[in-house]
Image (cartoon, rainbow, N blue to C red; front, side):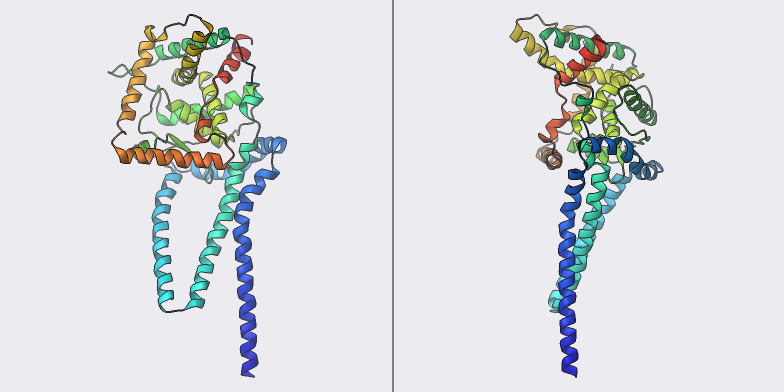
Amino acid sequence: MKIFLKNDRTRFGFWRTLGRAVLLLILILLVPVSYILPRLLIRDGAADYYCANVFPKISMIPGLISGAFLFSLTELFVVVGVLTLIVLIVIFVIHSIKLAVTVDVRHMLHFIYKVLKAVAVTGIAGALIFEFMHGINYNRTSVRKTLHLYGETRPFEDYEQTLIWAYTGMTEARRQLGEDYNGVAHLRTDYETCVYDANIALNTLDHFYELGLSGNYIHAKPVWLSRLWGYTEITGVYDPFLGESNINTDYLDILHFPITLCHEIAHAKGYASETDANTLAVLSCINSGRADFRYAGYYYIFIRLWGTVNDYAANEGQAMIDYASEADMAMVMRDMNAYDEYMESFNTGPIADLIAHFSEDVNNAFLESNGQEGGTDTYVVPQNAYVEYFCRYIRDA
């Protein structure tokens, strides 16, 4: 009788172990499936519908939770999460060693099974949240395609006129700004007002061009560890798990901060592509009612076009305006020099360089893994997009 009971227990233990192994294998396979499948199924028109109608409702819940806190939840979870992960790894190693020393193979395998099961379930949940909060948004129609900014090669005159337009807008906005004792321009309001106005600028752009942006208010958060962020050369991060935009506020540079702020808010409003987010940021800034936002937007276009138009003029044998000697350009140069001095403060040796390169490589790998060919190069909007925008919506409107 005892022999039969023992055999039954052995058979039951075998099938239970096999069942657990199969379940674990299924869970592990579901991690990449959860990451890939939603983006494969929701594409083209379906993606546009999802981003414009479904995403705003889904992202509202984490947005409301995040907006209830004045500080960055992302930063808090990252710091606490890293410390917690270190503790859990230590506990896992110690417990595994204890089981190995006692030669308790059955308990050790059961312990490893529970850990892998928890990791797999977490991976599935994380993949699904990422896809529905950000990944699917990569599939939507691009801003450039919606606004028909894919033009044919335009003549030198169009590039030159666009550069003059950007220069005029930049210098006119700059003259309206206050300066500190070094003659460097500063923002016109405090940070929270900038966030509010950035939301309005993006919503206004969406109203005119029907881009399908979420109408949710995005409370972009300042980061306490902004000074340390500077060594990574990260100016902003969108957290898809919390629907939270995070901004490096160590130096609210007049030339770049408004673009960064609108860029990260654009991610939270439903555009995942870095090219799209930058296009939206620049266009919302130049159409803003704030002079400091317009200054940053026109500066971005001017700097992107300056070298291109110079080369174009040389090839065409055309005369080029010497903007560097223009009186108004001296104001802009002071702001540029102040930003360069700030960035130089992070060049403190090989360790700082290693951190910056590592950050760049991680970001590049992340973008490439999400189908963004060129990685971090996708942050750069092609110059002809701004030329096409000027010709289509400003000059010929």
